[in-house]
Length: 328
Image (cartoon, rainbow, N blue to C red; front, side, top):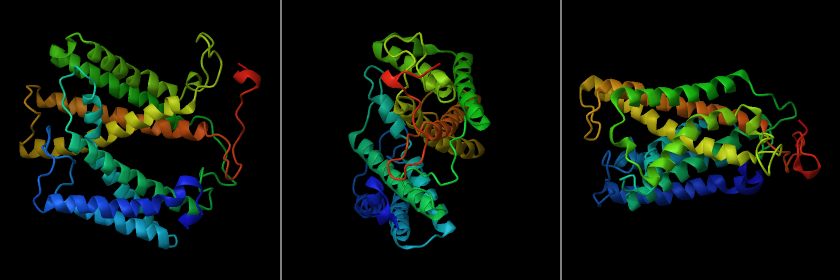
């Protein structure tokens, strides 16, 4: 089945299987007692899957990859594949902190081995997810490249995408207000890196979600010099939205679970800070809302801006006319 898929989709299941075996061997080596990366803030490279649990998840990925390659349509298999993919992505959630920590001047350190381990883990999640997506499209008789079917019609921005975009903005705003309520403190120490981070934080919480649903996220406004009324490159918006959205959802989804469990048993640790527990019960769900909203709005943006498929020929041609300008 998957061998008939076009382009890179042709080899995702094989790559997922090879990844599971090879990286699983590394996890076995660490589980047997070899020194494993144990950086702060949680003392492990992965979230929720350590020791033999990480080996078990690699084994599950190998089994799922083999089944996707050989089995006919089975909806439990599709559910299992997506569950394994989601678990792999969620376990690599601390990769988001590594990316932030690479900015100089923020006082954060990045453990190189843990970083590579998380990148490898996320890669496995993407490979299993891509294989599951192709398997699902095949079962629906849709194009294996773009997912369109004969009945597919590119819809306008649906109501739920608007709701998701504004929910992301609301989540960002609640997070900011929560920080103001407990005090800004040392966050205002001036530095170029901090200013860059805060500027990106502002854009990712306001401009980015709304660009996914408003026209100016697809066509540059007329007041923008040089590119006025030209199409916005879709990955200029879609790429950051997916990276930030998936990162926030994975990291703060796992953090929400940990916060709930450790609040109930009284073991919540915040890494040496002095913020009240109530702050985390406001800030963490706000981050999660921000991330989920971004992902949902990004999915709508992805569907609405897909170009004509080179494999099946489905899709509406771009409204770009001579010179790249779009009639207003």
